Length: 212
Ligand SMILES: NC(=O)c1ccc[n+]([C@@H]2O[C@H](COP(=O)([O-])OP(=O)(O)OC[C@H]3O[C@@H](n4cnc5c(N)ncnc54)[C@H](OP(=O)(O)O)[C@@H]3O)[C@@H](O)[C@H]2O)c1
Image (cartoon, rainbow, N blue to C red; front, side, top):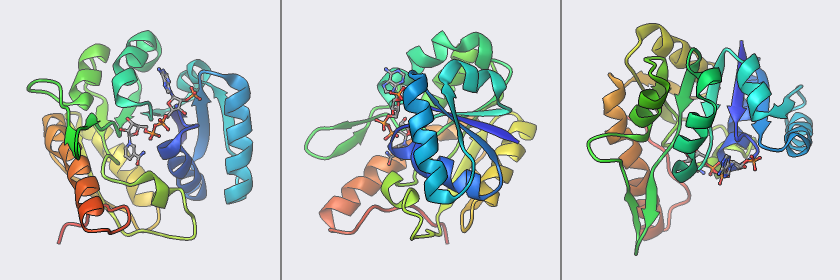
């Protein structure tokens, strides 16, 4: 299966690209800049000893079965809008966390919504699935560690959600949990700033979640 990580040149995209490639996925790293995409893909390929390709976001989105939008939260809606025609029929994964720093970290959800729901509205699609919001990029991109995190997966289309849960399960030591409809992304997105605050206040390294 071809998975394109749009904006995959950044902090979170790196870990996702490495771990998906190691799980046997055909991974494309997307960027606004082809040269940067190719450089990052080459760098990641060397780290995991796999082949990861780099393309512009447009070409990466066109070629994939599943697209992950690893774009900063305050840019992602404009990004999705610009790429609407290409993304509207694809399964789109949103790991996006709307978060602001103001003497601590706070969730900045759109009113009565979540970033995942806003992406689905723009695409007019039920194939948007949220996942990975609570995974800390630094630990995810460090292959010396294999963190045992849970990934809560929310979506309105059962088939798309099954595909994404399958992708999560294929990543070593991650457990996929069905989190219900896409609207539950509001809760999942809001867990991340809490984890960061807990991490800072208690001087514990980057945290993820495990539901027991
Ligand atoms: N960092 C984490 O620990 C973490 C954890 C869970 C979820 N997330 C979520 O994952 C997403 C990515 O986070 P990140 O930390 O990886 O972000 P990031 O490193 O700041 O940025 C990711 C990539 O987005 C692209 N980008 C930046 N501004 C853009 C714009 N205006 N339009 C289009 N593309 C733009 C850049 O790629 P090019 O310059 O190559 O185009 C950049 O490399 C966010 O939504 C975040 O909430 C992050």
